[in-house]
Length: 431
Image 1 (cartoon, one colour):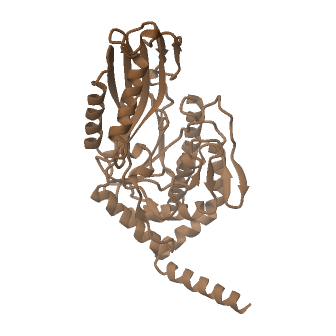
Image 2 (cartoon, one colour; image 1 turned 60 degrees about the vertical axis):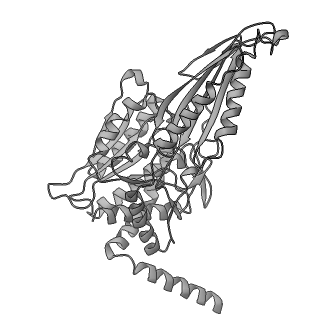
């Protein structure tokens, strides 16, 4: 019993010590987050239970409508950014709050996305509490948990009057997981971001101890090979050659042997089709091949992605890939084309300064140090589109596991404290 009292006394002493690092206004914000927490979880359940796969335009818009309803309650103007029909995506949700001529603090651009990888024809996993510390559901940590967290933080700030004369834009894209046309779809997103001082992105948090100051970019490549169709008994002969499939295999093997292992660089062949005749649908990704074992393949197609940190690494890798493609086997030909996707987010000094603010806050709150995370541990994200124009950090959202897979989870035991940290971060940045 004595040890219990000593432990309790130590906990109270430590808690008071950390509380002394926070201002009275910040302590009020923490209490406000706690007061609103039940409604926060209800909102999270509501949006998770709406299927919003990137191609489900009605579902994505429905999630946007829920956020429009909620943001309007806290004094934000909301709008839906329509996309041209050829993009074949729902559009984007935007909520804005503009300060007066004497706007105080930094102008903040908050980034999220409404869509998930789970399309309507996939098995649906609703919001389900598994135990005191875990819930499961589609898009819980990637990234509806982050979307709701950003709203919960802004609601607490609004409720206590701390958003007056502040300029904040919330931009939730509707096609982060599968963009129909990045150039068109991100045009408005980038233009609005340029009117702000910094960006906070709410993709999945990797616990309390790291923050994303850099993300790798993602681009695509397509390899086409051709060979001389002939009877298989003649394969390898000078007059017949090796065929399209051997040429594709050679190129992929040399990619791996000559390029694999470089820090932050990956290149994944996600699909290969080969035979005497092939077809491929660029929209659906479906492919067909006609071939026989006694025919030397005439055609092959490989599609893949390339992930990198910085334009220099991307361009240097593409040049090396092209060099490898040009070393054709006998009686074969090959060509590779590249398609830009999401740019990379380099670890700039401005990003590191933002990370320092978060680190100091986390220590003040008693959560421990926050250090910049490894760029190689994260995929590409929307924040990278604006990283050239303003300071930014990412990974501020919900923590969990299993993103992009059945059984995706959120850590309910960490969620309220991550909301509190987010709330105080916005508060400090806007003072």
